[in-house]
Structures are given as structure tokens and as C-alpha cells.
Length: 236
Image (cartoon, rainbow, N blue to C red; front, side, top):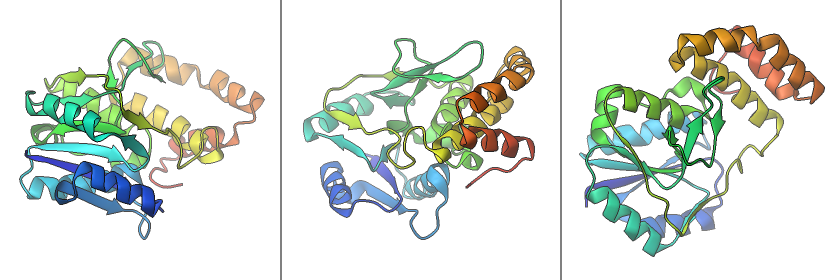
């Protein structure tokens, strides 16, 4: 098996992390601890990816530290990966709204694979580069999937029982920081990769978007939009 697991952590629950590493198999796990120097998920992931590529791994499986999985589910997943051509493979897929390029998950239409637990072939990183680090957190996995598809690599979705991810645990769903990164990075994602018609629509819609955030008192989102326009990316 030529597969490395990259786990990015930030102030982790050590017991849960130890259990996860034991399940994955210690010798092939690269843990990137962001506690001392918080590079964000994207920056931390890139550190792990570089290490895996240096060591000659063919497949790199990104695993969030809040993922729980059974050894049987892992075995099923790795069997699929070992039989696959270069691709991005995962058990959770999402789609992109055609009008605004916001993200929708779960979905039956596959536009991207959730990066919480996903296998990425080394050729993809070697062809299109790393995760886009200025996002810090959120949209880096979707960005990579869009770029990979445009470079001719397939996405493969295999729902597997026994793999579970507690989404938004680190920032807290709806928290100030969650709003901030989601709003700022959505605009950056649209700028980087969306069709021209989506860019035009999203920029023309901005007054309505701001109004909606004000009505909902989503101050984090408003700061994120402001920072997008003054080109402040990375960590809040």
C-alpha cells in the first residue's frame, strides 16, 4: 500500500487523535500540528502533502482530526483507492449552485468531494499544485477539485458507512469566524474560478448580500466581505 494519511490538527483532543492515528495505521500517518504556528487547514495540509510527496507516496488521504471511522470502513475505502486511476476520491460529495457558486452538501450531483476525508493522487498535486493557502480554512478542497477536473482528473464518489465527520467543530457553525471565512472565501473562490457570468452576477448582487447579512446580524460575514475588498486573506 503506497498511501499516506495527512491529519491537520489545531489544539486537538489527544485521546481522540491517538485513536484516529491507531485506526489509520501509525507508520503511514503524517500529523501536522498547527497549535504552535497556525497556518490554517490549507497551509497545514500543504505541509503534510509536501512531506508525503517527498517520501514518494502515490496517494495522499486528507483526514480531518474530528473524523471517526471504523477499520472495516477504512479497509473498504482503501480497496477502492488501490484499484483507481489518478483521481480525487471520497465518501461525501457536494455540488455548486449554478447561479452564485455557493456550495451545497450533501448532494446527488457531484461537483466536488468533501476534503474532510478524501484521497488525492500525487499526480494531481504535481500537475495543478497545492491547496490554495490564502483561504486559510473553507473552500480549499472545493477549489482543488475544480482545478483538478479542469486538468482532466476525475472525481469519484463512494458513500461508505462507518465514516463520520463532525463539521464546523473547530469554528462553530454560525460563529463570527465561521461567517467570516465563509463569506470572504466565497468571494475569492468566485474570483478565482467561477465563469464570468457568475462573477458579474455576484458583484452586482453585493448590496443585497450585505443587506441580508445586516438583517441577520452576521457581523463576521460583513467583516469577511470588507477584508475581501481590501485584499486581506489568510488568518483572521
